[in-house]
Image 1 (tube, rainbow, N blue to C red):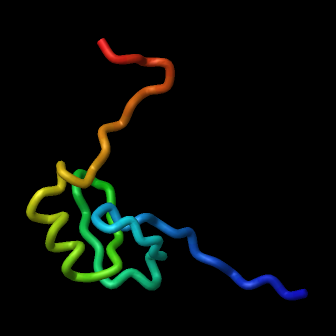
Image 2 (image 1 turned 60 degrees about the horizontal axis):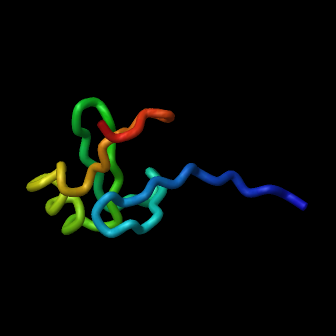
Length: 65
C-alpha cells in the first residue's frame, strides 16, 4: 500500500477548524508565529482582536499564584 504524504494540520484559532498550511484560505503572522485560517473572515476577526483567540502558554508544573 502506498502512503500519501500528508501535511501537518493547524487549528484555526477563531473557529477551531483543522487546516493545513497548503489548504489554508489565509494566514497571519504575529510575533513571529504564523496562524492559519479556514477563511478570510476568521483571519480578519483574529487580526482585530488576537488576544481573544490566543491561549496564554502555561508552563508544566506551574500552578496559579
